[in-house]
Length: 235
Length: 262
Image (cartoon, rainbow over the protein chains, first blue to last red):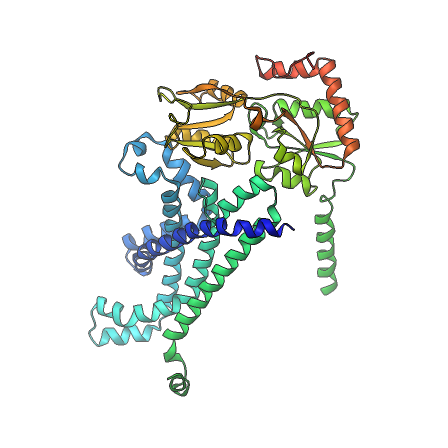
């Protein structure tokens, strides 16, 4: 074990972790924005809402993330029309290609998670709200959204962890995020055990912090499920 | 039932632990993505100069078809794989460098290489610190060329590292890269192929001995002195009897080994 190498590599790996953070953070935000309409379309009974959303989710859940990354990075750059378009300054950069692929991928999974959460809301509540004359939007805002978002939390934290680990695949398109930097140092030192172990520790640490945050948020928003005494004890 | 599961688990365990031992079979690793040196043919078999040399050496060493096996290993896991005993020798166009010598042992060189910068035709690129300033250059990670690029142009060039030569060539074609640096033999054969149309070699071949090392050789674990001796003897023999030259002529029009001069 080369502990000296592990110590001297920590700053490099942390620099890589920042890019990993950016990739996961941005894709998570953009993915969420896409996922909400996807989930609503998915639970709709209208064919022209339901079918495109179903097809989208089916495609992105049915293909490996690596293939999606390659499709965006190497695939799109094959076409001269794309290289001539105004999208090229973005698609030229591996950074944006990774974000596009991750966003599209996580949107599909998050959409399914939200759909499950929406369907888990007791139908009686929706009927009651309709009977009271709530509009569709009010129903969504007051009854469905507040409950569904909380119900989706455990599944969503799981998806986020998967996305974090999936972000390692960005190293295959020359991005020097955590795994990319690790592989580069290994290429120079031939010490895979020390460096992959160090990278694994950093991933575990990030995952740990993420789960803590989600546990806290979930606890906070599920206060209504706990008996009143406990709530009072908490202040 | 429980007994059956136990037996099944045991059987699976035994089955999976079997191939991990290299045993008596000499395992020869190559990359399979480095035409014309080593590549996978459409039918799935390996071909190329390295592969031919490996077969010729095995034959010279008196190994029959059951006595050795060629395996494919990705480039950046090549030396770690050797050290982890996944295979016993590397015949994959690996240059002898001081850094690698810290980790593995090498036989005598079986060819000598130079590097070439390749850019799109008409890119008007000058290979110098000024000419490459601010340019993006692609290179395969963990290669002699990656070290050369970092060492000589690292402060002025934006270097992108790829896992294979094919991938940086794709990005050269797509316009993400201004140039790539790789082995001259590889690049000249790529330029002759259909994919290489529209690109050209720029500047003089790179042959800086500080980076290029002492030629391309077969790598093996340190301490395997007997195997190294056998490989060197076989190498001498195929060079002396003309087999080496005959194989090289299949792929290259110039001499890649100084026959008779050493």
